[in-house]
Length: 329
Image 1: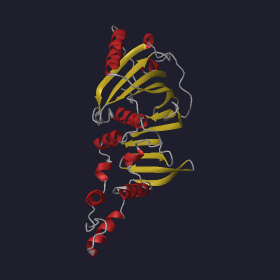
Image 2: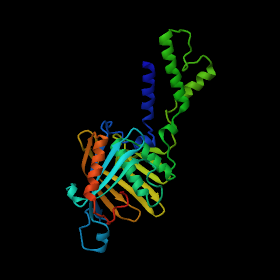
Image 3: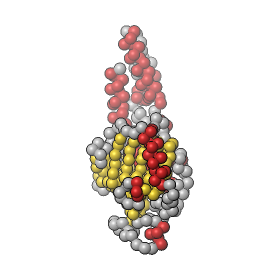
Image 4: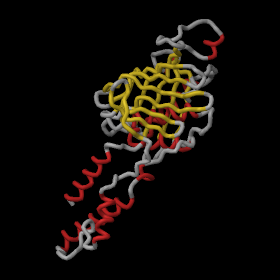
């Protein structure tokens, strides 16, 4: 058994030099998430073309349709399945309290297929898939949504070298059997006596644990080593050591949708998050999304139900008609 574990670790280390797309989108620099709920406070500002500061509030028709500065809070609750419980709440100011609550939307089963894979919804689909990657260390959601858009990416379980896995599994069974029955004449499946079969096994064991589809390569980002993903309409940059997602670009005929993550830090003392993101849509608009609050905690189903009920009570009689940024719900 010890030999099997060591062999598996060595194989995983060898594979680390060419990570898969899913593993890069997993935000592997973070510790495992042990609580079930995450909240994020977001301040969303419209940015002037070519500038860094938010557009000041003015009494114009454009600003009335879409605010220069907006405040949202996301609640992400993990479940036993592939989906999450997702709530987005909008506030009129940075107090994030009930008196400023304006709008809420809630999905009890938010999956990679909840947001439609079309031009009108793609910004939401990619943004929230990236949020799940950043907060829950989950790259599968983003890969599945990109696949629904026709991007030629694959999940890890679609790339795994099944021949090698089978040899490892047979070796594990061999170790268990020989340890239990003390069979000295049992043949080691990784060292068969037949020369042809032995060459076949050695060839498989020298291969990577995953099939390399040539979509990931080493590159540089601002003079630093980084992983570059190129897959159809998608290009992504992920930091080399920490595996922080840096930039994700989805190319369309109307223009590029791009999210860039800036200034990662230990936002809650244990998990890295960017201090802010810039979001550029195909129309040429740019938004700055500041993460002004981030928290992990454990929540019961009753707590969630009570919060939803409270929101409904606060919002009774209210109506929010102002546009929200296209990448938000």
